[in-house]
Image (cartoon, rainbow, N blue to C red):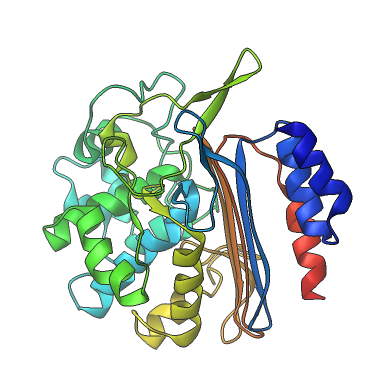
Length: 337
Protein backbone atom coordinates (compact mmCIF):
# COMPACT_ATOMS: atom_id res chain seq x y z
CA UNK A 1 0.00 0.00 0.00
CA UNK A 2 2.72 2.49 0.90
CA UNK A 3 4.46 2.45 -2.52
CA UNK A 4 1.20 3.32 -4.27
CA UNK A 5 0.57 6.16 -1.80
CA UNK A 6 4.09 7.46 -2.31
CA UNK A 7 3.47 7.39 -6.05
CA UNK A 8 0.37 9.49 -5.46
CA UNK A 9 2.44 12.00 -3.52
CA UNK A 10 4.99 12.24 -6.34
CA UNK A 11 2.42 12.60 -9.09
CA UNK A 12 -0.24 14.80 -7.52
CA UNK A 13 -0.56 18.46 -8.41
CA UNK A 14 -2.36 19.26 -5.15
CA UNK A 15 -0.45 20.20 -1.96
CA UNK A 16 -3.53 19.21 0.05
CA UNK A 17 -3.59 15.74 -1.46
CA UNK A 18 0.15 15.43 -0.93
CA UNK A 19 -0.23 16.29 2.77
CA UNK A 20 -3.11 13.83 3.17
CA UNK A 21 -1.30 11.07 1.31
CA UNK A 22 1.79 11.63 3.44
CA UNK A 23 -0.24 10.85 6.57
CA UNK A 24 -1.21 7.49 5.05
CA UNK A 25 2.30 6.78 3.77
CA UNK A 26 3.81 7.58 7.18
CA UNK A 27 1.28 5.26 8.83
CA UNK A 28 -0.26 8.08 10.89
CA UNK A 29 -3.80 6.95 10.08
CA UNK A 30 -5.38 4.06 8.15
CA UNK A 31 -7.64 6.42 6.22
CA UNK A 32 -8.53 10.06 5.69
CA UNK A 33 -11.26 12.18 4.11
CA UNK A 34 -10.57 15.81 3.21
CA UNK A 35 -13.16 18.15 1.76
CA UNK A 36 -13.11 21.86 1.06
CA UNK A 37 -15.63 24.24 -0.43
CA UNK A 38 -13.99 27.63 -0.96
CA UNK A 39 -16.14 30.64 -1.73
CA UNK A 40 -19.05 28.42 -2.69
CA UNK A 41 -17.09 26.12 -5.03
CA UNK A 42 -15.96 22.56 -4.31
CA UNK A 43 -12.16 22.75 -4.33
CA UNK A 44 -10.95 19.59 -2.61
CA UNK A 45 -12.59 16.16 -2.38
CA UNK A 46 -10.18 13.43 -1.25
CA UNK A 47 -10.66 9.97 0.27
CA UNK A 48 -7.53 7.90 0.82
CA UNK A 49 -6.59 4.71 2.62
CA UNK A 50 -8.80 2.20 4.40
CA UNK A 51 -12.20 2.54 6.02
CA UNK A 52 -12.32 -1.08 7.16
CA UNK A 53 -9.12 -3.09 6.85
CA UNK A 54 -10.70 -6.35 7.96
CA UNK A 55 -13.40 -6.13 5.28
CA UNK A 56 -11.03 -4.72 2.65
CA UNK A 57 -13.18 -1.59 2.27
CA UNK A 58 -11.50 1.61 1.11
CA UNK A 59 -12.19 5.05 2.49
CA UNK A 60 -14.83 6.98 0.53
CA UNK A 61 -16.27 10.47 0.67
CA UNK A 62 -19.47 9.04 2.13
CA UNK A 63 -17.70 7.06 4.87
CA UNK A 64 -19.36 7.74 8.22
CA UNK A 65 -16.96 8.77 11.01
CA UNK A 66 -17.14 9.24 14.76
CA UNK A 67 -16.95 13.02 15.20
CA UNK A 68 -15.87 13.10 18.87
CA UNK A 69 -15.98 16.72 20.13
CA UNK A 70 -17.13 18.12 16.78
CA UNK A 71 -20.43 16.73 18.15
CA UNK A 72 -20.63 19.50 20.75
CA UNK A 73 -22.18 21.94 18.27
CA UNK A 74 -25.07 19.52 17.74
CA UNK A 75 -25.63 19.28 21.49
CA UNK A 76 -25.62 23.09 21.70
CA UNK A 77 -28.02 23.27 18.74
CA UNK A 78 -30.37 20.81 20.47
CA UNK A 79 -30.36 22.98 23.59
CA UNK A 80 -31.16 26.04 21.48
CA UNK A 81 -33.96 24.15 19.74
CA UNK A 82 -35.53 23.57 23.18
CA UNK A 83 -35.03 27.27 23.91
CA UNK A 84 -36.76 28.13 20.61
CA UNK A 85 -39.59 25.80 21.60
CA UNK A 86 -39.85 27.65 24.95
CA UNK A 87 -39.24 24.41 26.83
CA UNK A 88 -35.96 25.58 28.36
CA UNK A 89 -34.23 28.78 29.44
CA UNK A 90 -30.51 29.48 29.21
CA UNK A 91 -30.77 30.68 32.79
CA UNK A 92 -32.18 27.37 34.05
CA UNK A 93 -29.83 25.77 36.58
CA UNK A 94 -28.26 22.34 36.53
CA UNK A 95 -29.54 21.82 40.08
CA UNK A 96 -33.13 22.12 38.87
CA UNK A 97 -32.69 18.88 36.88
CA UNK A 98 -30.68 16.84 39.41
CA UNK A 99 -32.07 15.58 42.71
CA UNK A 100 -29.89 16.24 45.77
CA UNK A 101 -27.67 18.55 43.74
CA UNK A 102 -24.86 20.25 45.65
CA UNK A 103 -25.34 23.87 46.66
CA UNK A 104 -22.79 25.06 44.07
CA UNK A 105 -24.88 23.64 41.24
CA UNK A 106 -27.64 26.14 42.01
CA UNK A 107 -25.37 28.72 40.36
CA UNK A 108 -24.53 26.58 37.29
CA UNK A 109 -26.78 27.62 34.40
CA UNK A 110 -27.33 26.18 30.93
CA UNK A 111 -25.46 29.23 29.64
CA UNK A 112 -22.42 28.28 31.75
CA UNK A 113 -22.51 24.68 30.53
CA UNK A 114 -22.63 25.76 26.87
CA UNK A 115 -19.83 28.32 27.29
CA UNK A 116 -17.49 26.00 29.25
CA UNK A 117 -17.66 28.21 32.33
CA UNK A 118 -19.56 25.84 34.64
CA UNK A 119 -16.58 24.91 36.83
CA UNK A 120 -17.66 21.24 36.84
CA UNK A 121 -14.86 18.70 37.39
CA UNK A 122 -13.97 16.27 34.59
CA UNK A 123 -16.13 13.14 34.53
CA UNK A 124 -13.50 11.41 32.37
CA UNK A 125 -11.07 10.87 35.23
CA UNK A 126 -8.16 8.45 34.64
CA UNK A 127 -9.90 5.88 36.83
CA UNK A 128 -13.09 5.80 34.72
CA UNK A 129 -13.70 2.47 32.96
CA UNK A 130 -15.16 3.42 29.59
CA UNK A 131 -15.93 -0.25 28.83
CA UNK A 132 -18.25 -0.56 31.83
CA UNK A 133 -21.98 -0.15 31.20
CA UNK A 134 -23.30 3.14 32.55
CA UNK A 135 -25.91 5.82 31.92
CA UNK A 136 -25.72 9.58 31.56
CA UNK A 137 -27.76 9.88 34.75
CA UNK A 138 -25.20 7.84 36.69
CA UNK A 139 -22.36 9.96 35.32
CA UNK A 140 -24.08 13.24 36.21
CA UNK A 141 -24.99 11.99 39.67
CA UNK A 142 -21.40 10.82 40.12
CA UNK A 143 -20.21 14.44 39.90
CA UNK A 144 -22.30 15.53 42.87
CA UNK A 145 -19.70 14.63 45.47
CA UNK A 146 -16.72 16.13 43.65
CA UNK A 147 -15.24 19.53 44.34
CA UNK A 148 -15.89 22.23 41.74
CA UNK A 149 -12.88 23.31 39.69
CA UNK A 150 -13.97 26.97 39.66
CA UNK A 151 -16.85 29.24 40.58
CA UNK A 152 -19.54 29.12 37.88
CA UNK A 153 -19.25 31.87 35.29
CA UNK A 154 -15.80 33.08 36.31
CA UNK A 155 -13.37 31.05 34.16
CA UNK A 156 -13.33 29.48 30.71
CA UNK A 157 -12.19 25.86 30.95
CA UNK A 158 -13.04 23.38 28.19
CA UNK A 159 -15.38 20.87 29.80
CA UNK A 160 -16.58 17.50 28.58
CA UNK A 161 -18.59 17.30 31.80
CA UNK A 162 -20.58 20.39 30.85
CA UNK A 163 -21.65 18.94 27.51
CA UNK A 164 -22.29 15.53 29.05
CA UNK A 165 -24.65 17.32 31.46
CA UNK A 166 -26.29 19.20 28.57
CA UNK A 167 -27.09 15.85 26.92
CA UNK A 168 -28.69 14.73 30.18
CA UNK A 169 -30.80 17.90 30.31
CA UNK A 170 -31.92 17.46 26.68
CA UNK A 171 -33.20 13.99 27.52
CA UNK A 172 -34.98 15.23 30.66
CA UNK A 173 -36.72 18.11 28.92
CA UNK A 174 -37.54 16.42 25.60
CA UNK A 175 -38.42 13.05 27.16
CA UNK A 176 -36.50 11.39 24.32
CA UNK A 177 -33.04 9.98 24.00
CA UNK A 178 -30.40 12.50 22.99
CA UNK A 179 -29.78 10.71 19.70
CA UNK A 180 -33.48 10.54 18.85
CA UNK A 181 -34.09 14.20 19.65
CA UNK A 182 -31.11 15.42 17.65
CA UNK A 183 -31.96 13.14 14.71
CA UNK A 184 -35.51 14.50 14.50
CA UNK A 185 -34.88 18.14 15.34
CA UNK A 186 -31.40 18.79 13.93
CA UNK A 187 -30.09 16.14 11.50
CA UNK A 188 -33.20 15.73 9.37
CA UNK A 189 -34.11 19.43 9.03
CA UNK A 190 -30.47 20.16 8.15
CA UNK A 191 -30.45 17.51 5.39
CA UNK A 192 -27.89 15.28 7.12
CA UNK A 193 -28.88 11.96 5.56
CA UNK A 194 -26.47 9.51 7.21
CA UNK A 195 -25.73 11.18 10.55
CA UNK A 196 -26.46 8.97 13.56
CA UNK A 197 -25.58 8.30 17.16
CA UNK A 198 -22.24 6.61 17.85
CA UNK A 199 -23.61 3.41 19.36
CA UNK A 200 -20.92 0.70 19.08
CA UNK A 201 -23.42 -2.04 18.20
CA UNK A 202 -25.48 -0.16 15.61
CA UNK A 203 -24.92 -1.28 12.05
CA UNK A 204 -24.18 1.85 10.02
CA UNK A 205 -23.64 1.60 6.27
CA UNK A 206 -20.21 2.83 5.14
CA UNK A 207 -19.01 3.17 8.73
CA UNK A 208 -15.31 4.04 8.98
CA UNK A 209 -13.91 1.63 11.54
CA UNK A 210 -11.84 3.43 14.17
CA UNK A 211 -8.30 2.15 14.75
CA UNK A 212 -5.73 2.32 17.52
CA UNK A 213 -2.05 1.47 17.38
CA UNK A 214 -0.86 -1.68 19.16
CA UNK A 215 2.82 -2.64 18.94
CA UNK A 216 3.13 -0.60 15.75
CA UNK A 217 0.10 -2.20 14.09
CA UNK A 218 -3.40 -0.87 13.52
CA UNK A 219 -6.11 -2.72 15.46
CA UNK A 220 -9.83 -1.93 15.64
CA UNK A 221 -10.64 0.42 18.51
CA UNK A 222 -11.78 -1.10 21.80
CA UNK A 223 -15.49 -1.41 22.36
CA UNK A 224 -16.67 1.53 24.46
CA UNK A 225 -19.82 1.11 26.56
CA UNK A 226 -22.94 2.35 24.76
CA UNK A 227 -23.49 4.60 27.79
CA UNK A 228 -20.25 6.44 27.10
CA UNK A 229 -21.00 6.58 23.37
CA UNK A 230 -24.31 8.41 23.80
CA UNK A 231 -23.15 11.49 25.72
CA UNK A 232 -23.51 15.12 24.70
CA UNK A 233 -19.77 15.76 24.58
CA UNK A 234 -19.16 13.44 21.60
CA UNK A 235 -22.00 11.26 20.34
CA UNK A 236 -22.39 11.98 16.60
CA UNK A 237 -21.34 9.92 13.60
CA UNK A 238 -21.48 11.66 10.23
CA UNK A 239 -19.95 11.77 6.77
CA UNK A 240 -18.34 14.66 4.95
CA UNK A 241 -21.55 15.23 2.90
CA UNK A 242 -23.47 15.41 6.21
CA UNK A 243 -21.10 18.08 7.52
CA UNK A 244 -21.38 20.03 4.29
CA UNK A 245 -25.18 19.92 4.66
CA UNK A 246 -24.78 21.16 8.24
CA UNK A 247 -22.59 24.06 7.07
CA UNK A 248 -25.18 24.99 4.46
CA UNK A 249 -28.00 24.81 7.03
CA UNK A 250 -26.09 26.99 9.51
CA UNK A 251 -25.23 29.56 6.86
CA UNK A 252 -28.82 29.69 5.63
CA UNK A 253 -30.14 30.08 9.18
CA UNK A 254 -32.20 26.88 8.96
CA UNK A 255 -33.14 24.61 11.88
CA UNK A 256 -32.84 27.30 14.59
CA UNK A 257 -34.09 30.84 15.09
CA UNK A 258 -31.91 33.82 14.17
CA UNK A 259 -31.34 34.60 17.86
CA UNK A 260 -30.21 31.04 18.56
CA UNK A 261 -27.71 31.08 15.70
CA UNK A 262 -26.45 34.42 16.93
CA UNK A 263 -25.95 32.96 20.41
CA UNK A 264 -24.07 29.93 19.08
CA UNK A 265 -21.75 31.96 16.86
CA UNK A 266 -20.94 34.79 19.28
CA UNK A 267 -18.20 34.55 21.95
CA UNK A 268 -19.28 34.46 25.58
CA UNK A 269 -19.60 38.17 26.49
CA UNK A 270 -18.95 37.52 30.19
CA UNK A 271 -15.34 36.35 29.73
CA UNK A 272 -12.73 38.66 28.22
CA UNK A 273 -11.30 37.28 24.97
CA UNK A 274 -13.52 34.22 25.25
CA UNK A 275 -12.76 31.85 22.34
CA UNK A 276 -16.05 29.98 22.43
CA UNK A 277 -19.72 30.44 21.66
CA UNK A 278 -22.23 27.60 21.69
CA UNK A 279 -20.45 24.36 20.85
CA UNK A 280 -18.16 26.30 18.50
CA UNK A 281 -14.77 27.98 18.68
CA UNK A 282 -15.18 31.49 17.29
CA UNK A 283 -12.69 32.91 14.83
CA UNK A 284 -14.97 35.76 13.77
CA UNK A 285 -18.30 36.48 15.51
CA UNK A 286 -21.82 37.15 14.31
CA UNK A 287 -23.09 38.49 11.92
CA UNK A 288 -20.47 36.99 9.56
CA UNK A 289 -18.98 34.25 11.72
CA UNK A 290 -16.06 31.94 11.19
CA UNK A 291 -16.47 28.94 13.50
CA UNK A 292 -14.69 25.64 14.01
CA UNK A 293 -14.20 22.61 16.21
CA UNK A 294 -11.80 19.70 16.36
CA UNK A 295 -12.41 16.30 17.88
CA UNK A 296 -10.38 13.42 19.20
CA UNK A 297 -11.37 10.12 20.80
CA UNK A 298 -10.48 6.46 20.59
CA UNK A 299 -10.21 5.65 16.88
CA UNK A 300 -10.96 9.09 15.49
CA UNK A 301 -9.53 12.57 14.81
CA UNK A 302 -11.73 15.22 13.21
CA UNK A 303 -11.94 18.88 12.18
CA UNK A 304 -14.70 21.13 10.83
CA UNK A 305 -14.44 24.83 10.04
CA UNK A 306 -17.11 27.07 8.50
CA UNK A 307 -16.65 30.60 7.22
CA UNK A 308 -20.09 32.01 6.54
CA UNK A 309 -18.92 35.30 5.05
CA UNK A 310 -17.57 33.71 1.88
CA UNK A 311 -19.34 30.33 2.09
CA UNK A 312 -16.27 28.21 2.78
CA UNK A 313 -16.09 24.94 4.71
CA UNK A 314 -13.11 22.71 5.58
CA UNK A 315 -13.49 19.09 6.71
CA UNK A 316 -10.85 16.56 7.82
CA UNK A 317 -11.84 13.09 9.07
CA UNK A 318 -9.33 10.40 10.13
CA UNK A 319 -10.20 6.97 11.52
CA UNK A 320 -7.42 6.86 14.13
CA UNK A 321 -6.77 8.66 17.40
CA UNK A 322 -4.16 11.33 17.96
CA UNK A 323 -3.60 12.17 14.29
CA UNK A 324 -1.66 15.39 13.77
CA UNK A 325 -3.42 16.59 10.61
CA UNK A 326 -2.15 20.16 10.88
CA UNK A 327 -0.15 19.86 7.62
CA UNK A 328 -3.43 19.14 5.82
CA UNK A 329 -5.29 21.96 7.55
CA UNK A 330 -2.44 24.38 6.85
CA UNK A 331 -2.70 23.64 3.12
CA UNK A 332 -6.48 24.05 3.26
CA UNK A 333 -6.12 27.46 4.90
CA UNK A 334 -3.84 28.56 2.09
CA UNK A 335 -6.70 27.95 -0.32
CA UNK A 336 -8.85 30.45 1.56
CA UNK A 337 -6.44 33.37 1.11
